[in-house]
Amino acid sequence: MSDIILPQAGRAAILDGKAAAAAIDRAAAEAARALTPGLGRPPCLAVVLVGEDPASQVYVRNKARRTEAAGMTSVEHRRPADFPQEDLIALVQELNADDGVDGILVQLPLPGHIDERAVVEAIDPAKDVDGLTAASAGRLVLGAPGLRPCTPSGCVWLAEQALGDLTGKSVIVIGRSILVGKPAALLFLEKNCTVTLAHSRTKDLPGLCRSADIVVAAVGRPELVEGDWIGEGACVLDVGINRVDAPEKGEGGSKLVGDVDFEAASVRAGFITPVPGGIGPMTIAMLLANTVRAAAGRKGLPIPENLPG
Ligand code: NAD
Image (cartoon, rainbow, N blue to C red):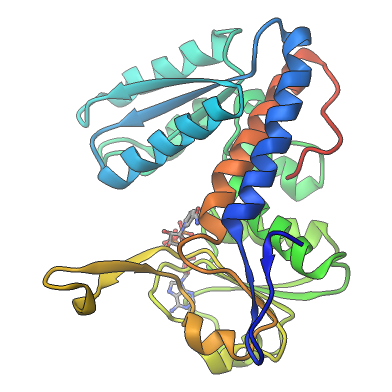
């Protein structure tokens, strides 16, 4: 399969998130094209960015670039860091009311004076392409159709590329955030996995990891998961993105690492995602798929069957 790079002897196969994401982008583009006559226009994603956070600016730029490359419309709404919460909620409500907008994404984190939950809850669930409103979360818990969070959907997709049907697999998700850990646990449950949701108070994390078929690390601690925590042949999905010093790159040099010690884990795992280039690119791919899904859903058009996520 093109998105699995086959292993060297004694090492895990690398799950190439970039290649998998490119394939999903193509499927989303095809689905967007098919929907355009029914909609009378291409699907449209509105992205709201408040403040100047450099990482958020990069994410928003990448989202716009890939949305447009998939033949959809991307509209950015940039506001200054001191933008008042009530004005931000009013902007979200305007986008809710705009029939030309199918998906709304408010880039997180928001500046400290803003209650993120209040803003997320202002998004019309039909346009909630990040899958973060209480309504979307409730649908996930119920197993009802709805828009699912993008990063966890990317984890499940890559696990299926590696292992096929996930029924009966044991999964440990490390991290219980609303954004990643909790929805990841529920999505793997939806695939008939047996799920352990671990967190900072979990006892014997290494032992729990060793017995898992699939390890999802979503903590935000560089290389927390050690090589000997990984069972022979396990599938390791590293969500963490951590910038650390890299003196080998010269003075002030830095690099990105995940929550897993990649080198050590690669010797034991069957499959592993790299950082960068693993789960990261999958998040935007799932966002494009969700934008198509939202556009179809709002207009009562059939959702293309081959759409991932
Ligand atoms: P978060 O800080 O909201 O949650 C971290 C979770 O880790 C918490 O539930 C906490 O209980 C748990 N935790 C902390 N220390 C622990 C420990 N020692 N042992 C076990 N669990 C521990 O973070 P988040 O938003 O879920 O993000 C997690 C990581 O994923 C970050 O590095 C973030 O940058 C990255 N991320 C990546 C993507 C992507 O597209 N690849 C998307 C979202 C987040």
